[in-house]
Length: 510
Image (cartoon, rainbow, N blue to C red; front, side, top):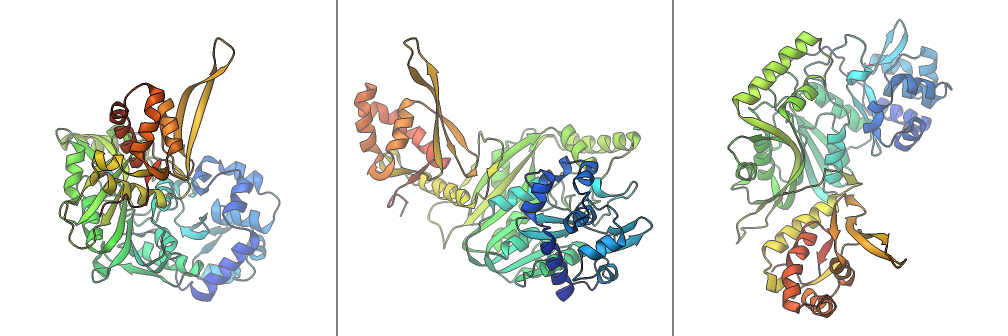
């Protein structure tokens, strides 16, 4: 593994905390920067042209100087950098390799990102690098949509210990250190290891431990309440970039991470893996992926995001590290497409795998559930409670017959919302012409409702069995309770599965 990038040396402890204090004093944090730049989160930064950011930071304030120096990675005058960073001092930053002195002024060797209350040093992305400055093989990626997805889905209960496989800059380890007594990160990339330790010191998280090694090898004797991973899952014929290219053929890195992570879980513990998987000709994807979880003593939920064609996928990843000239791009596209054709890859999907270890020896076989018609993966903030809700719902539904469901009290989820669309009728009154149910927090899920469904959901308060509610509704619909039940039962199951309805107390299987 080669590098052409500077590595942080001897910059930790008091220096890192003084840098942290300087950044906070200047307002270099999430909301302040987002407001200044007019963006919703750090993942939107790439949508703002650099010259626009330069115009928005012309006032010379410490925050403006730091945005230019550390976020945009532009050169600033030495005296401006010194004024903006008085506690840590420019000399210490230069000596530690955080910044460099150039003919045009002081330039940062790293990009600094505010993310969910953390401050993270990462390698400069393509749009922040100088012309001709290429990403190194040991490139340490920043914060993107995949980072936000896993951060939103990660279980955040108070716990004893968590593990981050392929920890990179340390972002998920550091987020976990806020709710775990011990947070461990493992990465095979020495550069990532050094940056992650710097980020732990920068954020003052002394319970974050980083290990240099392959997958789970350095922590194989430990057990965890939570395992998360954003591994190098890109389906690529190349083995160039450590953060990106899978070390296994096709999507083989995913079952490897799943197997290793599941093996280190305590009873009731969760493993959550962000990944890509191949949809291969002649191999039904649900059955193929289900084999990844065989014999792991874990129930599994495969949350599907979106799928893309091999052509789009290849082009996106080939250009993610730079903009090759047309001949080089054609050659790379040809290699990648030949690789996909050779293995029968029809499309590539993005998603998250969530596993929960069954306590003890489960009497029933472990289940694997895959979203069949998912909405586009999107979130309205942290969604870990929804993850637990859906795992519990799958367990409940698989152990509950229709007759037992009929005797079960249900209640509407606290974040469920019903929206009615009204249309004018011929007599001048307004009638409900369409209705939808949605979740107002966490996972952005929705579904359609008819009049009976709307009334049924509003009646679900957890005090009366579902069958009793059906009996009350049946006369108004003009059918028998049994006829209405046959229509309601599959809808109720779907709404429980999607988190709109929750099983009342005593409804969970023994």
